[in-house]
Length: 468
Image 1 (cartoon, rainbow, N blue to C red):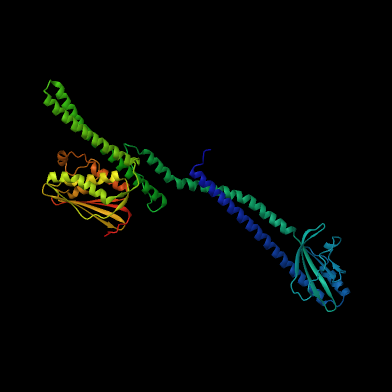
Image 2 (cartoon, rainbow, N blue to C red; image 1 turned 180 degrees about the vertical axis):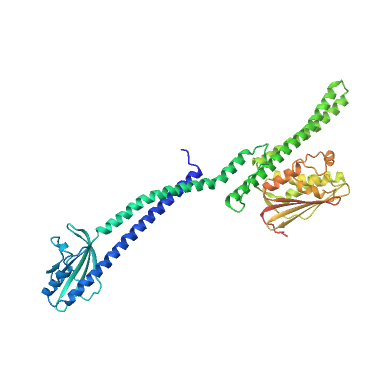
């Protein structure tokens, strides 16, 4: 089933809430009006009953009381009266009650009670009546005085009010819903404009942005968030394009070398030594292609979250010592001193193969770019539940303007030095990806002709006894 759009949902919710409010308001008005009419009726009955009490107080006997009451109260347009003795004998009844049945009988009302007793009572042929009763104390007798008034007029007024509410409430709801629909449309108009602008954005139009009318309201905040998202999207697409171009360039170079060498070898017959040289070049370039392909595949798996990573307890100190031993021969061959500081027992959770690759990449770079007679040092210490490994060299260093771009794929601070080392510009990107996957951080500090310092911080599994 197709759901309604936000505008109609807002309108319907607004109409439902308003309908509930109108119904509640109408009920309150009706109840308050009914209460007001009853209070007015009781007040008027009390006034009439007070006049009746005055006559009772002036009468010297029952005959005189009956004569006075008949003269003043027998005919009355809106009220009817009845006076009876406490034993139930009827002394007086106004004309409106003749043949209509008895009013509420004496029920033991206190003689000294100054307030009247009120009750709604149904009389034959008269309908619902409001009766006020009170014991009157005369000079020679106590009597029950009663005044009554029909509630028909009250019912008519309440019915008129109810009809007014039944007519006015739907009109008010319809008008309010129409106004609510307009307000909902007006409120959703900026969202429609945002959607229209977002629909224009494509791979060839990444610079389009949503106009922010009011940066302080919720829609302005939404537009700013969407613009920020599109900024990141544009940056990601640009990085992807640059990565694709760089990868194509990196792959084209060894492929061109392979093609050229094979064409030269096939052009004319050659001696075995020349064929051997061609095969050696081909083998070297194929190794370079294989290494580049493996690195691209590893980065692709990391980006997609498919890079498998074991969660083992890795003795990081032993791993550092193992990688240093592997690269010591390379350092000695270049005439670079490789020094290692004291290592304590550090356990980290992760993949020992990836962590070994991380250390190998960083130490290999440090040795490659340190001239003969230089020094590469490895130090480790524990800080706040992390192991921090520092790899420092006295190499050629990296210009300050290139530091923010380190880790970008295929980025080379010195284009010429990779021709000598055979680097692809992906090693540091892979190292950063490995550190990130293990919940750590990697920072680089460098100064030209002074050296470079790389710090790796990884969370420890268990704090060592030799923490610093």
